Length: 125
Image (cartoon, rainbow, N blue to C red):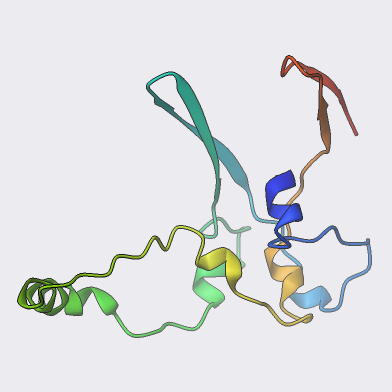
């Protein structure tokens, strides 16, 4: 989580809200992937979660065009050229900027953790 803060992809907020009707805390969990000798961990947010009688964040978002229909055409165009350019879009979503009024709908809880040099948890705040 500190990496998200350092890259300014998330911000620490005060207790005040800009939009009380849209205040929502996203549930999240860690997913660990063991690759060779290292373990990679990523955070997965559940935007389909909702309270009874209230829509989820996914339900409240505007729907865009279905881009899956263009995958076949993209693959065919990719094979026609001699030069290919690839892009790793894994961090793309985290580069979006939300307006101040909409940020309260994407809050999540996290506690600050300090680690010792041997990666053992020292304390949580």
